[in-house]
Image 1: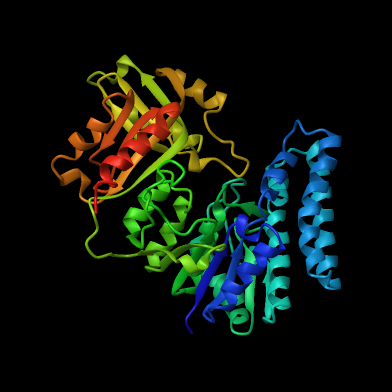
Image 2: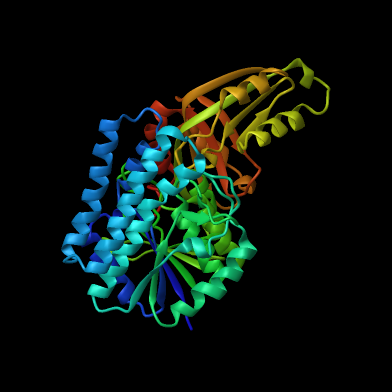
Length: 452
């Protein structure tokens, strides 16, 4: 049986009309048997605010009311089927209970369960929308199969366990129902709710597709595929019909928000093709991500990742010595910080931090404890308000003239870091965040808009 896993993001399930459009997309393809949903647009942000220690009782009640209004607006359009209404009431009551528990107990386990509630509401309601349109559909608690470790806020999936559990508990359901389940969340071996970190719903869909050996994963969002750059920065940006896994991984890593960076990994392992399209305008098509594509161009896209932190480490111990980098990376690893880009000189190391490593609440980088530990063996300087601009393509490291073409465009901008050569698929520069839009627009005009 051909199997497609479809994932719908927050804007795609924002309200009843949006869910109805997505239901039509699901029903148009008989191979779509598993649907993975995010929380309705705005709900996760409200839940994150509920986890904050500074939230007042008055604000807590306002947040709970806002969350309930979003969910009840969808339920009302469903004409409030009794079983769905009762289940939704129970979920909203659980949100209130968990938010009250956090007042006395700042447990990360409680936070993760609270943050999972948006997806639980969406799965319940979207399954009901499908049934209203005549489909045989049921909602499924993904925590039965999405096994993770106990690192709350950014749990690591246990791939072999997920595959076994999905075959035992999820596969049989797909033969009789269109199954709707949650993205972003899982459970550890003790059954405690965990989350995969911000943006983890794409990853969830790909992990389930891998476990079920699906033919394709469809990521439905609010844009019609992947573009040569953000159209808001360069009005002449063009949609890309197909790209390779390597190119897509680079784009996701370096800021193309259409796709979560981790999504590509399970797809690559099983060579599952991935489609990215707009749930609002499915007729416009989208972008296919495949193992290989014919005639890949030197320049494929320009991506930008904002809100970057540059960590500068200076130590004379580095001079003709060994072990400094090993000690530095061991310190970062102990604090669960992943390094993104790095450049070195005899006595200095400059590196950017991978913010995809932040947890579900958006925190997790550069704690005081980390800075103090680093300061014990080097001088530390932190620079913020930076943006990483990446030129994505193919054969970049081996094609003459690339640097001249790129740096001619950048001659009037202060470049804080340059990384090129480690991958044939990218050339990265770090610039002031205030200049990022201008840099992206100029690079796109120079590298893409002069081409036929």
